[in-house]
Image 1: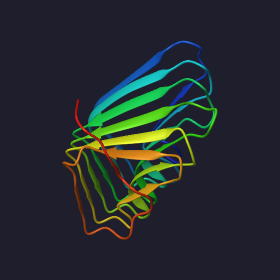
Image 2: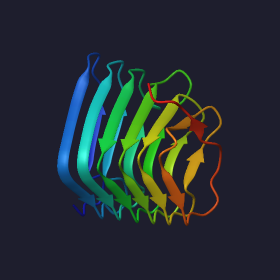
Image 3: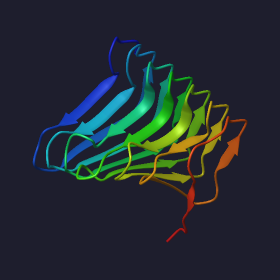
Length: 175
């Protein structure tokens, strides 16, 4: 809590699956970066599970999932967590063509008071955010979706009191 960089950097240069588990944690007031920063520089996949965690008051994003530097798939799931009052994004997933297929699944989360967007899938391709049973409120924009990226919604989310969003949400059915 309160570092000059990221609260946690999970960087994989591996060629095999790497896993991360975070529970009951606080990533707050990291002045120049994110709470956790999860990214691949190798060809190995990353799977992360995060629950009951607070990502608040960070200098860039509450949680940042970045697939722009590697080729291994990244799958991060967050439940029962909060991203509030971050300088730019609450929850951000990004990648680019030819790099890691990056997925961020948010279930029962709150994104509130973030200064750019509550949730975002950006950089132009290969990033997907899945949203279920969540609230996005009081952000400069509720969501930002770059062309080629996707935010899937199960239709059971609450968006209110946000500024204008960019892009479209994609309705998806539960299987």
